[in-house]
Amino acid sequence: MILQDDRTAILAIAMVGALAQISHQLKLPNYITACNRSDPHLNECVVKSGRAAIPKFLNGDTKYRVPRLDPLEIAELKVHQGSKALGLTLSLKDSKLTGLKHASFEKARTNLEGRHVEWDFFHPYITIVGKYDIHGQVLLLPVRGKGTANITLTNMKSIFKFNFALEKRTDGEEYMKVTNTSLDTDIGKAYFKFNNLFNGDRLLGETVNRFVNENWREVIQELGAPVIDSVSQVFEIILSRICELVPYRIVYPE
Image (cartoon, rainbow, N blue to C red; front, side, top):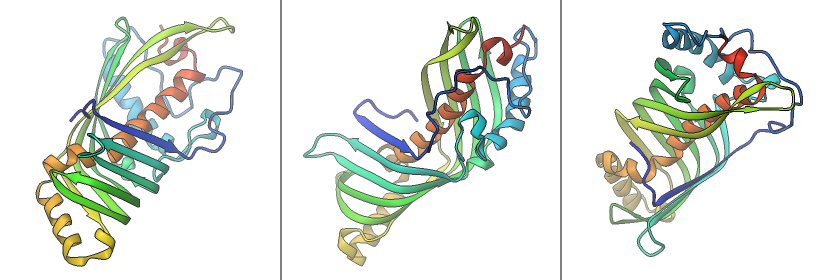
């Protein structure tokens, strides 16, 4: 699944001090094994190293400016799809995303000459719970309400892709600069629960919740962005911290 161009999402993650500048280069964390760029089994090395490193990163690493990522605290997330008259607006505040620690790093495709990398993951489940505010239409069904929401994706396959360039800094070292990222997903099933729809009208609320769960494949195109964007943001945080702080020759030695 790729989010459509007419949908926008804004994600704000609470990371106190995460943007503080570090003026000196760092080595790789001791829980990451560097993979030689000329290794004929480079991709296998990346997967093995990643499997060992990701759980450490998810617990946070202040030295590399990585906050705790499972549970991931999300200050605010907004999704707008379509026009004001016929569209849908969903906001989630004070949310927590869980389940990333159960992800399995499956495959890697590393093209260093082409400056392109892809990572494949399998997620048994990912859940985001928070305070929601929704109004608009879901599959032409009018929806409005405020309360607590739970969006859960199960058996999800994801492919995180990124391009990078090499930039030389004042310390004389080359660093990877991520220039583009994307996340493709294939979701096994999705579950939705919105409490207090229509100002607490139980009948209407149950009807809408039942409808969105029975039609989850279509609904996920409109309401799945909060979870998917959050997962993508986690990958970007981990990647950017390493690329910003560790020279390329250390990440991928010759």
